[in-house]
Image 1 (cartoon, one colour):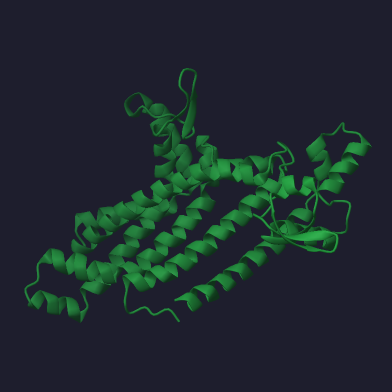
Image 2 (tube, rainbow, N blue to C red):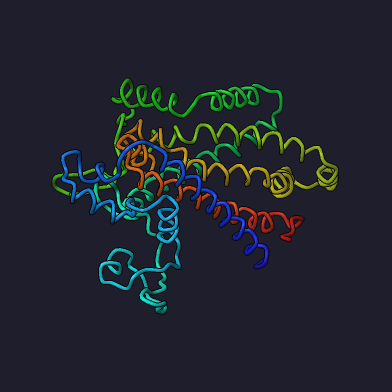
Length: 351
């Protein structure tokens, strides 16, 4: 188990390294002066040069890339100064000449627009996006498996045809289009009956109570985000259940007189879970990354909305930090899913 996890971790690090290279190259060939984005168009030459020096923009592209890697790496080399200690929040390991080898969290640099650390922006927005993606995935998984099992048990009936029609509709509707329709219909036309808003974040400000959690603002973006994975899980559960129910061991279980509940949920569904786990895990990571347009449409304050706003303002450190975070989440979830396979299905061996 340990060797397998270590091998997957090395593969994951290679993937993240590739993402770092691609992201650095893409955002360094885009037009725009980061120093002017930080200081404004009317800043003086001395201020611009100071900002360029702070971000290493006065150096060549290879040197900038090495500095970026040094900022991202948990083990990095820095000058031992109070300014660097405050900037990187590192733990000194040992001295190397005039500098010091340190242990720290990856430093994602500062926003050009707000001057805040990108890590602080992620810490503020990621929990909201995680709650949105998690609730959407719970709804999609629960309803998808239930509808898929019912559809398989009542194959070719009106129940099966209705479930398939809804699944096709859910797959066909892009999230940004479905979000606009859902926001308009349930947040505007039927708002008197639903009590829901067209836009709003998980936390809202109350002049008497301060910041309060507004759960109803989660419903519409959650439903929009859950539509596509729900449709896929319904079809996947139906097809795998039909395949499993035709196996010899299911016929043997029926011949032994086992109850329908035992056959369906303890034998058939458990053996049909592997492809469903793959879909659920892949979609959960995708929902974290795919919530960008949904959050923007509903005005939901999360990672997606912050990234889209940063793109509009050419705030590249925020966009780069968001992309690297999403890549890290994909790697971690893929490793956890492979381990979960072995726990769910004893036939799967980790080698």
